[in-house]
Amino acid sequence: MAEIIDGRAVADEVVQTVKRLTGELVDARAITPGLAVVIVGEDPASQVYVSSKGRKAKECGFHSVQHTLPAETSEEQLVAIVHDLNADPAIHGILVQLPLPAHIDAGRIIQTIAPEKDVDGFHYINVGKLGTGELDTAFVPCTPAGSMLLIERVRGKDLSGLSAVVVGRSNIVGKPMANLLLAANCTVTIAHSRTKDLPALARTADILVAAVGRPEMIKGDWVKPGATVIDVGINRIAAPEKGEGKSRLVGDVAFAEAEKAAGAITPVPGGVGPMTIALLMANTLVSAYRAAG
Ligand code: GUN
Image 1 (cartoon, helix red, strand yellow):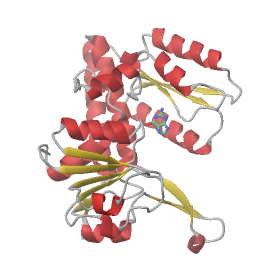
Image 2 (image 1 turned 90 degrees about the vertical axis):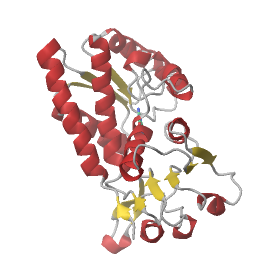
Image 3 (image 1 turned 90 degrees about the horizontal axis):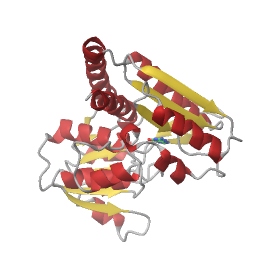
Image 4 (image 1 turned 120 degrees about the vertical axis):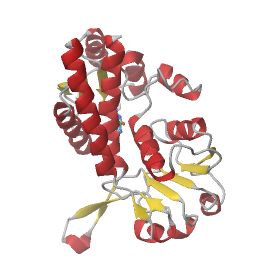
């Protein structure tokens, strides 16, 4: 049976380090890292994510600001808020929670965020730096960065020559994940809904990353024996066995089957999820250190 990768424990270590380095920055330079999170509308999942980001920021000792805006907020109003945050020296990280309401051009909003405060790593400047391997000055998106830390825990820092298959090609996870694995000298394949014979391709992977948003799509017999399986999916499905109207969270991987073949695997919940928030804190701290010079 596979080692179950404890994302909560690793995330907690990251957060403890962030707390310590925040204390040092405050003591030495009187600079408190500041994180602003902006949410537009009332998407319940987004509200949960945003409040946990705010809570974690406070736990790290950050200056934490939340802008909660009504669904009717105009694109121009949101642009103006981002401009204000760009100019605010107390703010080192800006995160606009996605998805945004359909009448707002999310791409325009992301490109309005100052690249040096783009702790999500979604701005073209940061995407380009990741693509060209300039990782020292880039912000790397939090979910793939956290997934890499988990992979390194299991396989060590040297991933050279390993075969990696990333299932999913989103800008938030799939593409940056593939770039990070490539920068770590893996042989990387990105698979997606048009990929032919996905099970056979997945079986070639020493590192298999699932980021498709389809509950339990990746079956046990898609997993190469001993592979490291990183499940980025968070899907809420009906769970009538828990009572009427109840639901539960599952990943993109059929965990009970996959853990029989994998060498190590992340659970859902408690795997990649906590790492995303921890890496957001780490990115914000790095931004504050960069601003301190
Ligand atoms: N919505 C879901 N994941 C994310 C994320 O990583 N960043 C932002 N801004 N919105 C999201």
